[in-house]
Image 1: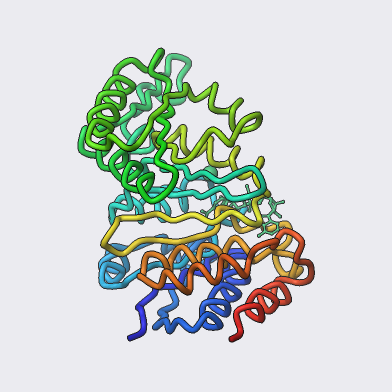
Image 2: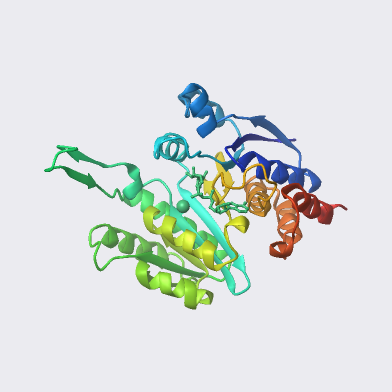
Amino acid sequence: MAHRVAVIGGDGIGPEVVAEGLKVIEAAGVRLDTAPYDLGGSRYLRDGTVLDDATVAEWRSFDALYMGAVGTPEVPPGVIERGLLLKMRFELDLYINLRPFTAPGHDFVVIRENTEGTYAGEGGFLRRGTPAEIATQGSVNTRHGVERAVRYAFDLAMTRRKHVTLVHKTNVLTFSGDLWERAFNEVASEYPEVSTAYNHVDAACIYFVEDPARYDVIVTDNLFGDILTDLGGAVSGGIGLAPTANLHPGRVSMFEPVHGSAPDIVGTARANPVAAILSGAMMLDHLGETDAAERIRKACDGAESLTGTTSQIGDAVAARLAR
Ligand code: NAI
Ligand code: MG
């Protein structure tokens, strides 16, 4: 039976790299029943649509969403980020952002809580635009939201090297940090085989550069995770290779490369499709096609040395899968 996948190519190089990802999945022998969705900055500029509720409702009946990237320079900041990316995460409750880092000397995973923290949109203005204006931006941390992210990290660690590091800033963020620390320690007590560590986020930035081998699974909040995963990408092979998953385990989940729509190289065939291909492999894991996912990852081994146009790289990876 074919898996039902909603495909959002998006803007810029998004459709270019997604086409290669689908090509490689087909070469791996997995059948997808795809439905295209034309969304992103270009669509917004054309008719004002960002993401309507009817579309979100349709997505609930799919097995997965596969996305390229959304965003164009002509659209004001926030419209697509809040209206499409964050709305998708919140409405589908994609509470785990999973980012694997695999490069020579790097083999760790960051679990970023994906629905709360400073990204929940709590806050407001007083006297906006006047000399006496005030802006506040709160951080939302529910015991339920924190605990399910922490639990996911421990479950994942059980399939790996059995080590979880909590990253936070408990010495300064004493309220949210306290909740995170207690939830972490209580869940840890249920996993006696898993060893644990704690790093302040600023120290973690140093270790990401100087000693990444200390990490197996990291769990952290939405904002720290956003920043830390970009640093992780920069020290482990670069933006053209990094995939990510936005998960609600057991329900429709979303898979995309970490990079954006790269308007500076759109149409030049210089976009590296490997990040999108590896996102496709993560999607296959979610769909239960773990064997095909593993074969795609193997075919991408040494991908940093693949050269050529976007479709030539896609063809080369697909050719390695031919049986
Ligand atoms: P970007 O990731 O699009 O580009 C940053 C730099 O990396 C550029 O020089 C680009 O050419 C290069 N690059 C990115 N992906 C590449 C690939 N696959 N192969 C080779 N080079 C690649 O980030 P930027 O420029 O900050 O954002 C551009 C647009 O993308 C903005 O509208 C932004 O909002 C959006 N964006 C969307 C994301 C998403 O859909 N989740 C994530 C990040 C940015
Ligand atoms: Mg980011």
